[in-house]
Image (tube, rainbow, N blue to C red; front, side, top):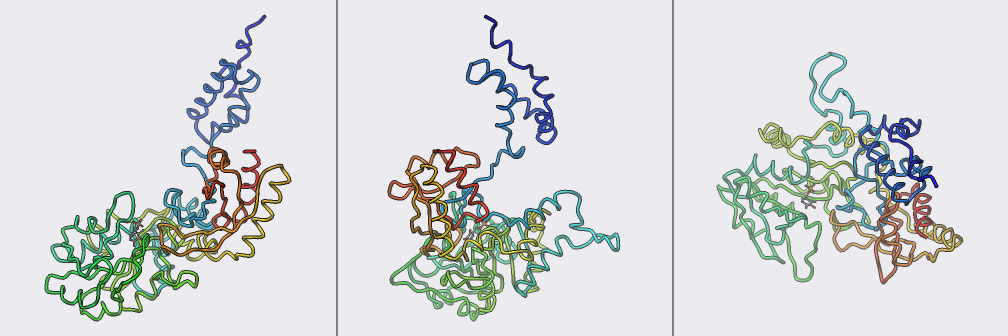
Length: 427
Ligand SMILES: *Cc1c(COP(=O)(O)O)cnc(C)c1O
């Protein structure tokens, strides 16, 4: 009998197959060759037939050269830090692709001269919130820049209930202190009044900092000073609103927003671009013209600046259609239920134990702690959780009372068919 392994196609032969050759052009020859070698090894081990090598290579081709994979977020957590926070809108993704090449980010095509970097993104921000604006790498960078420019060698007065750990062990007080500013803590964990701040203010004060506790809530016997009260103290007030809501949102009554903070008299307001704002990772700074100019001209600003991809995505998020995080927040509960019913019915007809159930979504670490967003989900046997995570595309749900819930508030309606197919493949 002939050794079946002799039938395994040679590397060059597989690489010359038109679909494989095409993949090598877009993904790079090295990456595709490694998949060919792996497929040949599987054939040698008898796991696949020699005739299946080409199909095996094609089945394992990644979507892109980056090993970051597109994931369906069915967790019900709108701003999921581990899943990359806000997904970009299709308009923002297109803008990123266009700006990825050579682009006029800092060039005036009419005059042929240098132009202000990111002017159109900044104009879009200023149109959304009428104030001076600046953009840096993320909200942590925005706070860092405020501390460097306004409080180096001075004091930052901050309430004890607002000494926030952002995540992964990073703490805002440590970040601020790393600039050489001194933190002056006032009040207590649960209660801090305007009088506490007033008593701490003096010639050494750089600014008063108001931080929104975006991932925890202090309830019960509590007190905090408003931005308006703090603005009356005669020193600059920096307000970190966290999530990047530009205006109040009816579903999130406790969530601070940029417009209200500025109207209250904040000198500078900082926020993240990739939480409820729904755009790329960025730190958004709004406020007083002279102070924003000082931040913009600080030497460290250059080290914190954003790239052209961020500027492109930011502008498209502001000028284009509603980004996915906002769509998830604004989704109609009746429609979520209808989608869950349709999905569950279709899965049951494929023999899967699926059921539409009420669910509770949340904004996540990015804001609105303690606020429940009513939602609808498809409940599956718990074993689906792992199978779905390991599928293509990977789907991440959550386990509630021994069932795997796929919450539809964080799934775009356009992704429902992909979600259904992903579940069917796990049957
Ligand atoms: C998330 C958050 C930060 C950190 O923002 P990044 O954009 O992740 O740097 C800072 N402050 C508050 C209140 C936050 O919610």
